[in-house]
Amino acid sequence: MIQATVRLVKEATGLPEARLSADDRRRSRLLRVSLPLLAPSDPAESDEVTALVASMQARYATWRHQPAGSAEPLVLEALSHVLEESRDPRLLEDVWTGWHRVGRSMRPDFTRYVELANRGAREVGFADTGAMWQSKYDMPPEAFDREVDRLWSEVRPLYEALHAYTRARLRATYGDQVPASGPIPAQFLGNMWAQQWDPLYAILAPPSARSGADLTRLLVERATTPSGMVRFAEAFFVSLGFDPLPSTFWERSMLTRPRDREVVCHASAWDVDFVDDLRIKMCIEITGDDFRTVHHELGHNFYQRAYGNLPFLFRDSAHDGFHEAIGDTIALSVTPAYLAKIGLVREDAPRDDDIAFLLRRALEKIAFLPFGLVIDRWRWEVFRGAIGPKEYNRRWWELRREYQGIAPPGERGEEEFDPGAKMHVAANVPYIRYFLAHILQFQFHRALLRTAGVDGPLHLGSIYGSKEAGRRLRTTLEMGASQEWPEALAALTGERTMSGRGLIEYFAPLSRWLAEQNRGVPVGW
Ligand code: X8Z
Ligand code: ZN
Image (cartoon, rainbow, N blue to C red; front, side, top):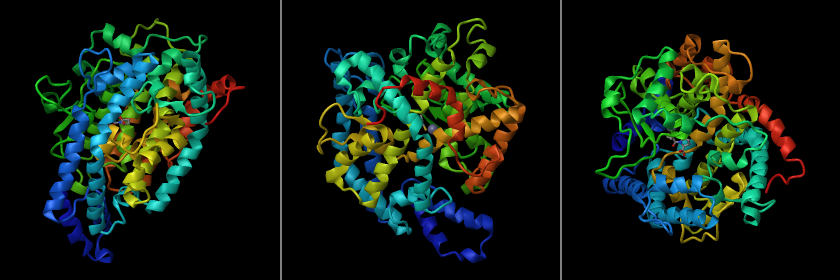
C-alpha cells in the first residue's frame, strides 16, 4: 500500500493542475497526504522503515514489567490498573518506571525511522514527515500550527484551574511528595501518560459532592459482557437512524485478549475492504472507561460506512480530528438520564450532582488537552531536525512540563526514550487529531443538541433517539473527505471555524466552582 501510494503520488505530480477538475485536484492533494508514512523509493529502505515501525510496535505490545511484590510480569493493562488504584508512592514509581523502560530499546530504531520516513516524505516534495502530517488540514502547515495555538489558548485557563485543584488535593493524600506550586509528579495522576486523570476522582471529589453509582459498578453488577458493551454503543447509533452493524462485524472483530498469541490491545477500528468489512480490535474490560471507548471506536466504523460509497480518495473524514470526535460526541450523550432511559440504572437511583459529574468529565477531557498537543509538538520538532537524538528525552520532558505541568518521578537521562512508551509514537500514529477531537466533540455536541431541540445545560443533554440529529450527523459523515473540512463543519454546526466555546460552555459550572476552590491556592507551575 505504501509503495503503491508513493508511486501514484509521483505520477500525479506531473499532472497539469490547471486542467484538472476541482474534484481531481482535491483527490491529487489528498493522495499526497493519505498515509502517515511514505517510504523511500529504494526497496531496501522501504522494507527497512516498515520493519522498524512493526518492530517498535511489537515491542510495545509485548513489554512486561514485574513490580516488586508481584507474582509475575505484568502487561500494560495490569500495570495501568496499579496506577489507577494504588496509593502507595513506591509502587506507583516502580510501575511507572518499569513500563517506561520499554522505550530504551526503541531509541536506535526510532532514530533510523525518522531518517527514512523523512527521506520518503522529501522524495514527494514535503520538507519532512512532520510537515506532511501538518498538511492534512486544508491550510499551510504554519497556519495550522497557529490554529492549534489559538485553540489551546482558548482552553488553557480551564486546564490550569483543574491542574491547581488537582495538585492541592493530591497534596492532601501524598503530602510534600507533591509540590505546592511546581509540576505534578506524573506517577500520581492515575494514568501511565498522565493523559486522563479520571481514576483520581475518588480522591479529588469534594465531600460536598453528591456522587451516584459509577458506570463501572453498574456494568459489572449487570454482568455486562464485552459484546454487550458494544451492543449498547451500536444501539445508540441505531436510535439516531443508522443501520445496525453488519453480521461480519460480530464474526470478525476482536473484542477480548486472545489466550494463544500476543496482540496489540490498544483499541482500534478498521474498514478492511474500505466498504463494509468493519471491525474493531480491542481487549474490552467491563469498565466505564471502556464503555466510552467502544463508543469512540464505533464512531470510526459508522463514519467509514457512511463514506464507503464515495470515490476511493474521498473515503476518509473531513480531517482526522473529525474521525476521532464522532464516537466521543455520542459518548457525551451518555448522561445519567440516558442510562436511566435504557434501563442500565434505576430511575430513582442517586445521581451525580453537577459538580461531581463535571469533575469526572473534566478529569477525562480537560486533563487530556495539553497531552494531545505535546506528542506532535515534540514529533514535529524531531522530524524537522530541530532536536536530535541526543536531546530526545530532555526536550520531551521540557514540553511535558511546559504544557502539562508534570514532571517524571526522577531524573530521566538520554539512555531512556520516554516518548516510545506511548503507543502512537512507537506505531507512527499522528496525535494532534485527538487534541482537535477534544475541542470538536463539544462543538458537535452543542450543535446536535440544538438540532434535536434539547435545551438546558450541555452536560445534561443527550441526542439519544433524535432522528433529526442523526440526519444532520449522517449528512456530514457521508461527505467524507470530498470537501474541505470547513464545509463539513458548517454542515454539522453552522460554523466554519473550530472553536473551544462549546467546551467552555459545557464546563462553565465547574469552572466557576474551581475558581472558588482555588482561592488562595497557587495556580500554574
Ligand atoms: O488511541 C485512542 C483511541 C483509538 S483511535 C482509543 N485514543 C487516544 C489514546 O488512547 O491515547 C483515544 C483518546 C486518545
Ligand atoms: Zn480513535
